[in-house]
Length: 503
Image 1 (cartoon, helix red, strand yellow):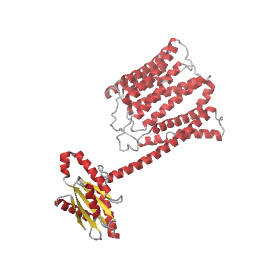
Image 2 (cartoon, one colour):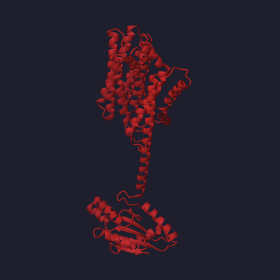
Image 3 (cartoon, helix red, strand yellow):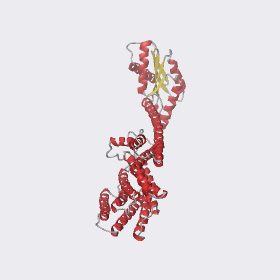
Image 4 (cartoon, helix red, strand yellow):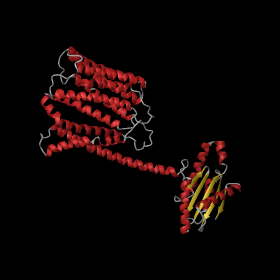
């Protein structure tokens, strides 16, 4: 990892050198065996460059940033090994490279490591946004990612096989092993590219510069892989250097991905467009629709050859992947709905309850008092209001500490609950003040006596009680609460640990 300015200079130099090598080998700047040697050695050099960059920068990195570099380094090392074998065949033994060969194993060795690297990059995400709840990931999210990739790859493979690759392979591939190698390159490239597209649509991925460069490198390799597979399937006598340009530029871009400065996990994405969200949603279904139309055309119209075993197997695999994806999405959506409901209940409770004692807060208490007042004025339903204030609570905090004071408030809340019914309201109005609303009781003062008995000698409190037995058109919830407050202060002036009742 280097600074931004040094990275820009390094990137310019690397891209210019890789491009110059490809141009020189492709457009007869260097001719004959010299062009072949330049092409092969340039590919090997950029592969080793990518490996060195990944492993060198991994030494100073930590966590996911280190893991994706190590994985990518192993992948480019495998690819470079394949290229070294290819170069040996062509420059030292001076013979055609057999297919399949150990070189193919090396080239394809980059696939599992690149797959791991992309998943690691995808898991390193920001979580400090306001929509973190909606964006929470579960294990099934990765399964959906894999199924999306399978759907896209399978659909594109059916399309490619039906339109071109199937006929070319049937005419030009002599053995099963050669057939598997021929289709392994485009299929694995498609899998990796689909994952790159999916991750690029995710605005929470932290390592976006690394993802872009790594993705561009894989695109370059995929382009040359497809060109190479086509030339092999048509039994071309040689592979022109221009078709190998991606094998030179691709590893160079992967190496630059390792050198690119790492953005801060706390920094937000610089730009995010809504169309990427739609691209992500539609990605599995557009290629599926295209391939389905093609297969339907062949089945109904019958102007092309009947479906072969490869098309049937790939089509069935895509069908199963679509069903599984819909099931997983349905389960995830159900979980999300339940999560949102739980969150709404939690937020509603937090908005109307005291966090320390769990009692109703002042807003909820005043709302319930308003409702009781309406019923009292309309139907004559009696109610009583108790205003409870602890005596000398400040001294408790000053002498014993706030932790002891909080524990005392929790004990008071518990004992107040025990004195009333479940339908009554007990609230912490603020500090050491509590309110109790008792509805439909003829003698609410009895509740006040129970409160004093429940608090006992351990806890001293003054209680003001207002009994609303007969409707008073001029009375309001605020005036009743004010009368209870005054009655409580009158009890406190009388020495505390008592109650004053007002009707």
